[in-house]
Image 1 (spheres, one colour):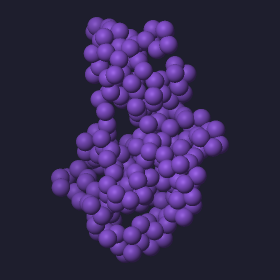
Image 2: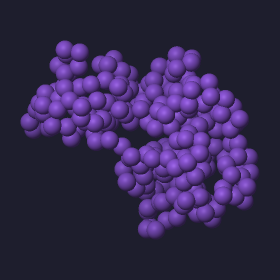
Image 3: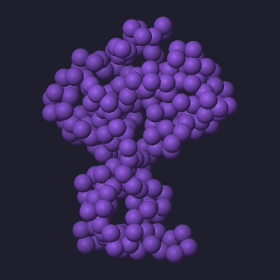
Length: 233
């Protein structure tokens, strides 16, 4: 069994300490695989804001440590070992986000950046105290599921709002956006996990999807509806 230690410390199952950069890559591969179905060198470079040669160098290091495999020239897959570490980073990130929003009142559009920094510094002991203090939350402020401390984690996403049929009612469960301006805009519209949207009509020729929320008709571009997820009520 792989024992996940505190950030930057040597894990019992690994030959080298996990730096913040290693954790960022593992989390990025996990995020891309969960949201897009696969991770590639180019998508990692875009998400992390680094040059492709730097991505290739890090992936080679992760492969030596049995954290990822590269079944094709540009494709990247987490090993079971790597996935355990990635899920541990995701758990820290999402619990920190929930703490910042619920306890400190940080706006939901700002917590991604803050949690990206703190996830590498918080110890497992402190994380356990945060989890206890919050009452063991199951989701973060954006509706992303928080991996449990023990047991298997399920990252399955509900359907995107962009695929909802006119006449249906969608209860938002997740908003998967990292762009603070997008989150701020959706928040100002009132579109957050837990709200119900009535899908009115899809404008033709690439036009917006019209929804009703609290008696207001709201046009949403596909760029936005691809980021909002939920099930029909």
